[in-house]
Image 1 (tube, one colour):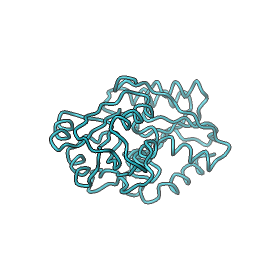
Image 2 (image 1 turned 90 degrees about the horizontal axis):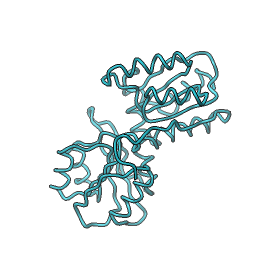
Image 3 (image 1 turned 45 degrees about the vertical axis):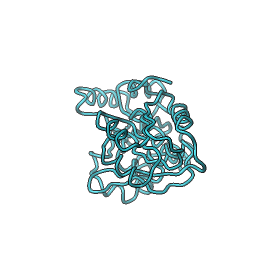
Image 4 (image 1 turned 120 degrees about the vertical axis):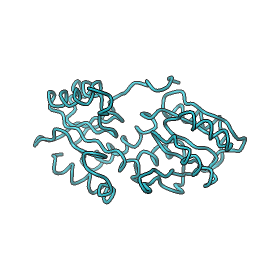
Length: 255
């Protein structure tokens, strides 16, 4: 797989979603060259540890959901130096992957057993609306917490604010801690709201409106969408090897 083939397939996969967002803001490329990319490593975040791990595994191209954060002062510069030093290309894709049919939200919903996507997550006036999916049959809150903890490999936070059985799930992966998003889940009669970050207002409002809440980490609620993208690339380019670049569970306690 060469640079041109990779970029062409990315445009084919995401289509108009790429036109909705600015390149170098919500998606972008670093250090792409004329060489062929035979081994792809993927992770949610770009960090120096991820780049070093990729170098040890002879990865040619790293795919991430997030670019290295500029406000984690000095980290992005170090990542760029390491990518250049090891001659590793990097591609990140943020909001277009959140809203893609195979992206972060739908991938996690399916990982939890959802059989029907009622509403995809989408961009509405600069904000993320929730994704909604339904399980084949209702489960208890305890059962869903156990399923999610097992899928993410970490102990999730949860509030059981209602005794109702769980079948309809509302979700924003990553930073879906807004009370407006919980209100959307309530208005769509969701039995639980799932996200990857919380704050005081998240837990206060969930309790106030009686909505069950499950919160995993930002990183591990979103890894399934990145994995889905890597798998699609492997399906298209059979000669390409893919490998997950492991990240630590630094946001929450491990399960």
